[in-house]
Length: 417
Image (cartoon, rainbow, N blue to C red; front, top):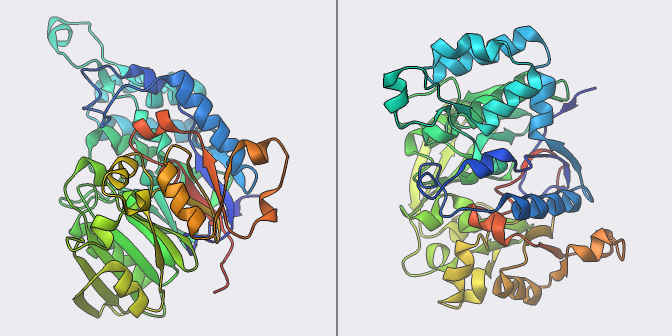
């Protein structure tokens, strides 16, 4: 029987999560194309796959781990659904002339070309001289599953991706949530794959549900103010009580593509933060929106994100990325040092390479243990009240994201505030 999706916080005990194990799509990148697919560097598939597999084993200690590709395979098992997907793909990417080729493919082969890339035909002089290598680009960003879809309570939001090379990720996520026999929701709040509107882009790295009535969303290069207005209105319509939303205006920098690169909640009263953008004299502007179900809004600036959250009844003590050291905080923030996944209140997973940030968490009362400590069966995570599980991920981090980026929670137990 399908399990209902349900997420009402960032820290509720994790019960089910979607990941995508990196595959052949990673090896399609070259030094000349990596910027086109939003990467900073080439990453080796063998090491990336090994690091990701270990992360999956850690996640499985806490939750059901669902593979994106397996869910998609189940969703398009029937020929009519595959035809629907092919129709959406060829229309969305302007390759109608290749419809018949895609329709001949079975589920496994179709998934292979949708994720690994669909090479361009070179059967005419014009096509031969066209420098485009693919009619459908490979999806090396797909292992950052967080961005393509979000769960708000028992409903789903499909991302509206800022860059064309990621639009197919959202379309595939939509098919999973609408067609998977293992997932069901009570509706779609916004479908960014099919409701594309000028000026509206939204990605999951910017979307943080702290409590069921309290959202923080990054206004970034990937998520626009128009998207925040739209999502705020649609979520408010689903509620009987007001929604409180904080919009954090991020700088236009490669290191801050999403909100979770500078802020994540890790416990009922703690958040890991990049101090210059959250606490410093040059901290980023923050706007609070209070929206009632009828659409009434009160909008005002607040002095800081943490100050605004405290005023809203959620005081969070900051744990400083890089221990607040001016050099270390920049280096570790680049390697996703604020990007943690909470698997339960006060129990989180992040990268082992960010040593100073792990030290800051240790000083804040979190036990810091390597993944092997638990994968070997030496001890159970349940023995700890506050815990950081440090996973090796230096090559994963070079892809531009952390553990939160690589996970799409679809079911969490309620915190019980």
